[in-house]
Amino acid sequence: MPLEEYRAKRDFVRSPEPEGDRASEAPRFVVQEHDATHLHFDFRLTLDGVLKSWAVPKGVPEEPKVKRLAVQVEDHPLEYATFEGTIPKGEYGGGTVKIWDQGTFLLKERTADKFVVELQGRKLKGPYALVRFKGKEQNGKNWLIMKL
Image 1 (cartoon, rainbow, N blue to C red):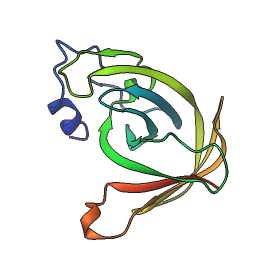
Image 2 (image 1 turned 30 degrees about the horizontal axis):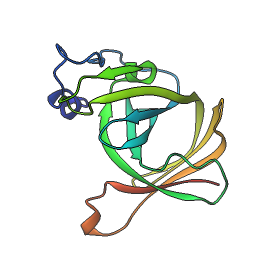
Image 3 (image 1 turned 90 degrees about the horizontal axis):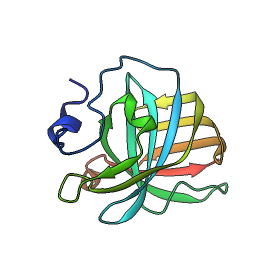
Image 4 (image 1 turned 180 degrees about the horizontal axis):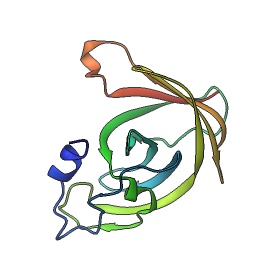
């Protein structure tokens, strides 16, 4: 099940986060400002019937050629693309979630280690790449995100 890891980390009786039941959706992206243990931004793309998700500690770059760490996290349900609210303290991801930007995207390239997308958001526009770090010590979860 694609959302098994996501659901296992949450108590939906206590948290207002969506459980997820939509099957598919047009290509869209969302960047959520997440003020949890540390303020960070979550970059999400609708792919394979879920939101593929990365935590970006310093925010998605708005200038070309600036590279930022993006740590891949568990897939989220499509409904999370519109989620804003407060996850209770003590729950996984406890803190405030706000939409920072959202829009559509065109998938230009996709391999196991690279995504290239053309974003059309309110703030983020143009080509972006996500490139996976090489090396076993990274567990495959560390990527770079950059505006091309």
